[in-house]
Amino acid sequence: MHDDSPREGRPGGVSRRRFMTGTGSLFGSAALAGHMVPAHAVTAAPATVIEPGAHVPALVIGTGYGGSVTALRLAQAGVDVHMVEMGMAWDAPGPDGKIFANTTSPDYRSYWLRTRTKQPLSNFLGFPIDKNVPRYTGILDAEEMGGIIVYQGRGVGGGSLVNGGMAVTPKRENFGAVLPSVSADEMYSVYYPRANQGLGVGTVDPAWFETADCYRYARVGRKHAERSGFPFVHVPDVYDWDYMEREAAGTVPRSALAGEILYGNNYGKKSLQKTYLARAAATGRVVVSPLHKVTSVAPAPGGRYTVVVDQIDTAGSTTVTKAVTADRVFFGAGSVGTSKLLVRLKATGALPGLNGEVGKGWGDNGNVMCGRANHLWDPTGALQSSIPCSGIDNWAAGGAFAEVAPLPTGIETYASFYLSITRNPHRARFSWNAAAGRVDLDWQTAWKQPSVDMAKTIFDKINAKEGTIYRTDLFGAYKIWGDHLTYHPLGGAVLDRATDNYGRLHGYPGLYVVDGALIPGNTTVNPFVTITALAERNIERIIAADL
Ligand code: FAE
Image: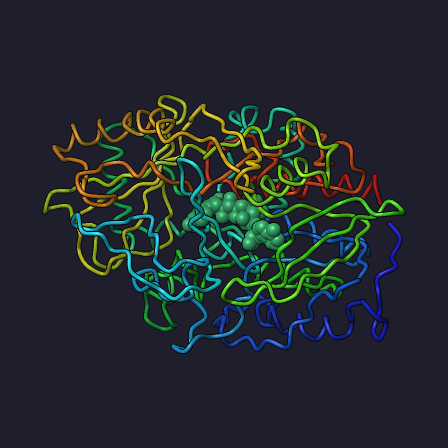
C-alpha cells in the first residue's frame, strides 16, 4: 500500500500533527506508561475528525477489538489509518465528575438512543427496574433484533467499554469447533499469546481471592459447584488486579468494588483505550473520528472505495454527511454492525458482488442467564466485585460453561447469579427487508431452549444437592431464565465462507472483515480474546501479502 495520506495544510485531508497532539492526550500518556489513572483525569484535546473529500490509505469502521488490532498493526507497518466510530470518545467527565455512570443508577450516559433503560436484569423481587432517561448517544446499545436483544458497546473502545473484561482462551480441544479453517497450532503458539499480552490479561491472586469480601459470591459459587462434582476454574480478566486489591484496602477510588460495569468503568479496567488504542495513538499514524457512522462503502475509480459517513450529534441526528475515499476498508463494526452493513450494501447495489454467505452463520454464543436463591447460611455478600473471576466448566459433559457473575446491588441478596455460555446449535441469518428499509435477523426466541437445557445440566443438579431453587424475580415476574438476550453476538460474515481464510471479502480486493462477524456463532467461552487473536493472525497475513 502506498502512503499518500494527506498532510497538514492539504485541503480535504487530516492533519497528522494535530492528530498526534490530540490523540496522544485523548488516550492518555499515563495510561501508556501503565499507570492506572482515573479516566476523567485524562485531558482531551479537540478531536480531529475526518473531513469531506478526504482520502485515506486505510479506513477502519469501528473501534472494538478487531478494529483496534487492525489499526495498531497497520500503523506499525507504516500505514496511515483513519478509524470511524459511531459512538462517543468517552474522554470527558459528566456533571458528577465521572466519565461513566454506575450500574445501579443508569442515566443519560448509559443507553444508546433510548428514552427508557433496557437493563439485562429487568426486575428485582419481581418489580420492573427500568426507568426513563434522556435520549443520548450513550454507551450500551440494547439492540432489539427479531427474537433477541443484542447488547453492544458504543464508543471508542467498542465492547471493551461495557464488558466484564473476562479474557478467556478456549480450551485447545474445543478450538476445531470454533474456527474450523484455522490452524490451532498457529493460534495457540503465536496469536492467542500475542492477544493475551496485548490486552493485558491477568488472573486474580488466589490467596487474595480466598479472603476478599468482594468475592464471597464466587466462593459460594465454588462451594456449590464442587459439592455437585463440577470443575470450577478461575477465569482471567483484563481488570488491573492490583488496583482492585487497593480498592478493597480503601486506598484508591472504587470502580469494580463500586459496582461499575455495564455502563463503563471509571478506573481499573484495561479497556482498549488503555491498551491497543493507546499503542495505536502512540504511533502517530492513527486518527479516530467519534460520533461518525459509516452508511455506505462502494467501489470508486482507481481501485479505491468511496465511504459515506454520517457525523451525528448526541441526539443521534445527522449533522453532516461526508463522502471520503480509501484504498482499503476494514469492517470492524462488530458482528451485528458489520453484518448489517454488508447485507444492506449487497442488496441495495453498492457491493452486489459479495457472495451468498454474507449475513449467514450468526449465533448468540449460547448465552443464557439465571439466578439461584441460597439459604440464609450462604450469604453472597453486600459488597460484590463487578468483575467475575470464576466459572463452572461443564462444557464437555453438558455443553455449558457458566461464569459465576456478580449481582452488585449493594445489599445482601442471598442470590447466586450466572451467565452461561452454551453449545447452542442454532444459527440465524441477516436479510434485507426492502419494504421496511432495514436488515432483519431471523433468530427465534424458542431457539434458546437448548441453552436452557444445557445450563440446567449444572443448576438443576446444584439445586437438588443444596435443596435450593431458581430465582424467579430477575427477568420478570415468575420467570427463571434470561433467555431474551445475548452479550456475545458472533458471525454474519464467516471466515472462509463470506471471506477468504484471512477475512478478505470475496469479489472486492481491499475490503476486509476483521471483527466478531468472522466467527461462526460460538467460541465455547467469552469471545473477545478469540476475536483479538484472529484479528492479529489475519492482519499479519494481510500486511505481508497485500500491502
Ligand atoms: P465491538 O467491540 O462491538 O466494536 C464494534 C464497534 O463498531 C463499536 O464501537 C460500534 O459502535 C462501532 N460501529 C458499529 N457500526 C458502525 C458504523 N456503521 N460506523 C461506525 N462505527 C460503527 O466489535 N466478551 C468477553 O470476552 N468477555 C466478557 O467479559 C464480556 N462481557 C460482556 C458484557 C457485556 C455487557 C457486553 C455487551 C459484551 C460482553 N462481551 C464480553 C462481548 C465482547 O465485548 C464482544 O464480543 C466484543 O466487543 C466484540 O468485538 P468486535 O471487535 O467484534
